[in-house]
Length: 478
Image 1 (cartoon, rainbow, N blue to C red):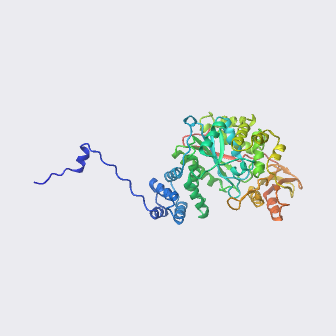
Image 2: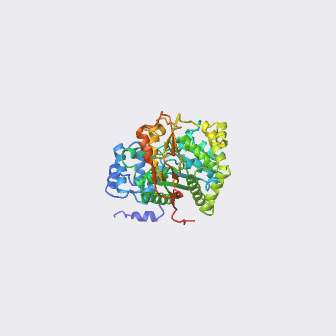
Image 3: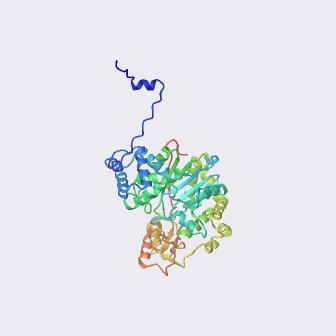
């Protein structure tokens, strides 16, 4: 007699537990590259597998470059970009904070501009408003200045801080501005270098994942990104910048992070000073409740949006007013002084910088050996001072790096002596250049004079560089 065979399904229905299905084998890297090259969609597991191979070193340089180019040419949908961002964030150490800080943790990121010293002002201003700001910043890239480089122009300032030191800074000061350690988001560092040499820097999903992965590890409750557009920005046209802004907001929402993205113009330098120590001085002037109106406008609007997003203000305008009050009453400057002293600056120097007059501050920071003023070539109204040629000349003079690790000339920079919309007479000084060389070369002088754009129209009030704010899908403008 044949032995009765019990159907397998009956075994599981009889109370035995079905073993879980084994996870599918990860696809070989060439298959993943082919899939994306041909316009296919990568699954979350595919993306995790690729990122793991990048960090482990099992992905060859050619394979990394091929995948980046496939993504650059074929793009990624929202779910793929969310998965890439999360995989990059998970590739290294995660920052941990006390549970009580959960609704206080905020940050700001900028895509880079000329004269952009907003972070120096905004981080301490937000701390004065009750936020915790664990700002992980970068160095100068191309013609744009880096926040870390500007802070390092202050003698003693240390950007390398461990997670434990960052927590101590947030407890004592409310903010810190530090560099990215190798333990945080290592996969992004590898892909960032590869993008630079494979012509894939301008890929929207790769930019989005790179920016947001570094913010995900900060465990923020809200983030504002300043997306620049114009002649001295990554995106010359506002529509391109808007596309990135929408991607950042949408991917942030997919990761559970409330992101707002501001579009701000970068044809003209922000403020009136460009260069490391000159920008530190101008940031302090803003924290005195003074300084250029365009800088103050961007600082208060970005800060107002963050306070509102984070539930610490009923409306953006209320948040902006609170940030403005922190600038006017000295509380932002007090936080900046405490941050300097806690991040390595001699407390006496920090105090003198923050309490001194502009002339006294200049004596305390590195200065260039020479100054040269340029004169207006004709009568006219200032339409624009082009930021890009100005930044390029300052880069040549030593304010920027030509290769990684090259020392900077912190005192090199330029002061705009005119405002957009102002009437200018022929022969009037419009720019003061601070340089270590004996004099500007003729090509440098011509390039700088070409940055000044004059017109015949009547004087006018300069428009704000702040163009629009893109909010998370569930939020309405307030």
